[in-house]
Image (tube, rainbow, N blue to C red; front, side, top):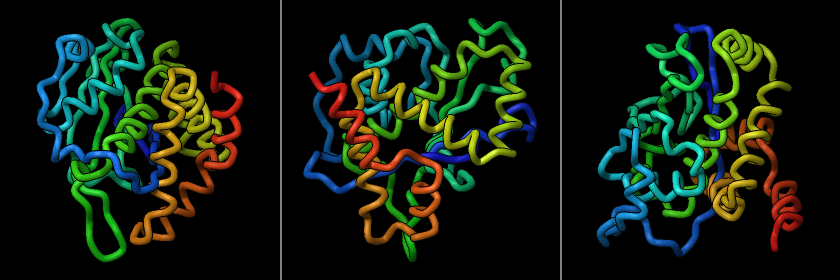
Length: 223
């Protein structure tokens, strides 16, 4: 769940670290079926690493309003305090809102206490939840002008209360878009993984909606 993002030089940090619990779902390294044309249609205006194409397209399919939004998904070796981060691209930061471009940074490895896990081996549903949360941030950014985004970033950097509210909005956006079960998978995976550091878990517990609170909202929205 959640994490600091930096944009407009070093003025802003936008976070995102989502959580998770091991499930029997297939991992990405085993995905071999060809991607359908319907799913591929969600890749318009997107730059997506081949190794995560299916999971990213699946997450995007829950956000049809982002079809025309320019988003680059990019592997990074190290993201400070984060596993994934969504942020406006600096090159487009001062353009009109409709022309703004975004980047979702993805840590290549999930760091553990004394080792690391290849992000591609995480359960498929967990990654969908993680990416879905980041896409929730992008939806949140879209209606904000450049000056509003600068203020947003400054508040995110300076106010933990603001961070908590921001991460809650991203979770609720994902829930509204039908990703509630995936978000639960992500939260449980992180908080129940025996080798993820306690420091990271405490950060997630402090800044993100708890699985218990989120489960209550999920129950209220279930058909």
